[in-house]
Length: 195
Image (cartoon, rainbow, N blue to C red; front, top):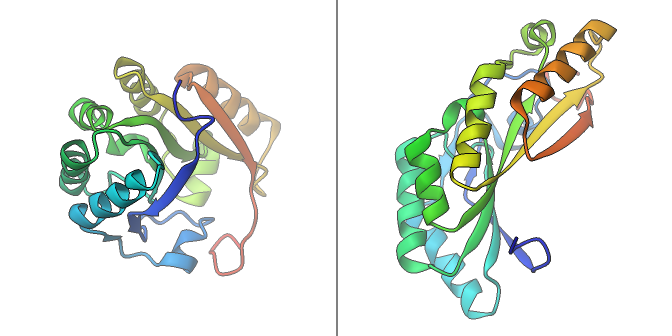
């Protein structure tokens, strides 16, 4: 698939996250209030980079589809002004739907990273993060439908981890079947509630 061996440029499109996850460093670095760049400014930057020979992008966002209307406007601007662009981004499984992923694909998106982070209901309660395999699996299947690569980020090693919660994580992964999987070890970052 196109994109893996090509030069990518990172474009910051959104920052800040209102979700209460206790381990997440985003609140310390970018704050809890989401701020979005204008769709036209994103298309402007992409267009300039395409002219210089770069057509693959990482649209960096804490949650690209946090504001669904904005995300659709970004897709429209890219599709109209940057038809050669190919890009990936990051969001949450409960923030995607069929129409949105279709618009992303039409605008050149070829992969979506999902910050699932936790898969065990027990851990989810401690760290204030949704862990719903049905919602996650639906997001992965919608990616399949639109021929988007799905990447699931998961985390292990929080202080409440047990063999049972690790088994929960294994079952979760088997249930949602992402195309790609990244497992991170939990870190108590200074400034987070988890720390």
